[in-house]
Length: 112
Length: 112
Image (tube, rainbow over all chains, first blue to last red; front, side, top):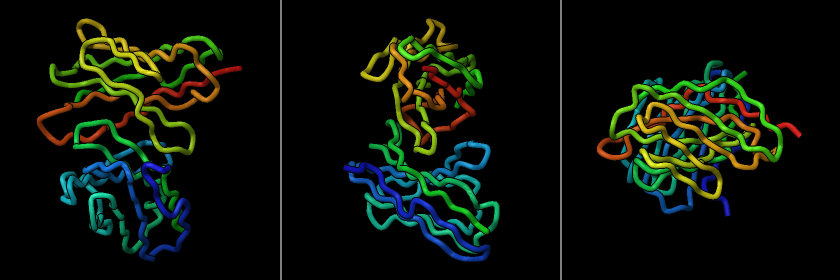
């Protein structure tokens, strides 16, 4: 059984388009996260939701908007995609904000 | 969160113990040491964490010095599948929402 799943695994799109990445966890966790890993392999937190409420919002352009319809899902919507948005995006979850995080397989976004 | 220093790369022979060092000289009394790893093209994976006592689980052992300024992750019998980037992270566990801050990690290569 997949603990944290993301769709799609690969996403290739043109500049200016709007796209979404979906994340689901079946671990019963109450906290979910989005991370971005750039071409230099640095992994940075973008957002964190606890019980569907935003608790961490790092310096991320307003074009990125997370949506948590319920505790098991945290989707990432990106408007007006730019070349610099090309990266691998990882979703993660944890039981409460302080415990170990479980990561999804990642979504490789390529903006042309 | 305290910063950590890790060697950029290490090699280890298959079947031997892999000892990965981490310096965290500015660690605070309430900060834990966490280790994650990222196998190529996969999401990061939690390994172990500790405060001041040595810890062991099915994956690894964590040795923290008495002054807590450094620690060592030990993979007792490294296999080829342990080849990955290993991240040492220090963070507060309780009291406030603290995200994982990933550094550049150590690329461990297990050689046949």
